[in-house]
Length: 263
Image 1 (tube, rainbow, N blue to C red):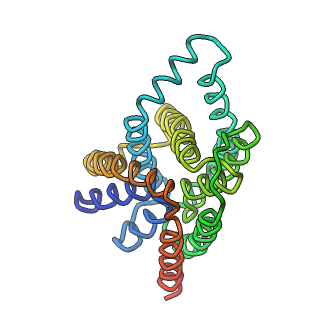
Image 2: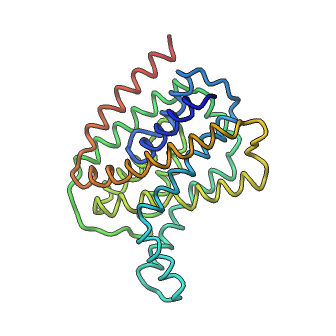
């Protein structure tokens, strides 16, 4: 993988991690089009690094909220920050379970599975369409809501199902305030990405010996910068109920992916 491809993939990751169009799906499509010949493990390593970059951009955008959460936790009181942190932990359980017990199966999905991506993009399109038609409310995230949203996040490990699209759509369909849904969706993934990164690095599952370091660095910064832009943009779009446009986009790209795969 050369520097241009790494930059392009980084930008795609940064934009699509927050926009509800499936970052993993777009990465797989882009790598297939660019002729990426990485074996699934190497391809997954590049994907994980890019996801870490967007997790960092999330922390930058929500730095005030994150600071307040940590501040509240260290006060050792049953306050709003403590409850929010517990809800984040609850939301992590389904994805953590999938990651621990089905890791090899997941790795095999990140190797140019274009046909799978196409069909999953259609599911994303349907979720976004339903969410955009939901009524606006001012409801907060409950513990049960957090678990249900966590299940959506676990399903979104499939390339082609947008993580942000699935979790935000699920939140809105549960009647949660749109701005709060976007905030919860973006923050709930950060501990999982960081934990995954630490686990893979300490366990030697991500090997930098077989993967060129320079493309990883270039891709990381491209994803980080574009991710900060997309995060702010997505928050505004969710508030204005503009998800139908992304629903149409996902359906069109999904159809193109299916045709490309079959041809």
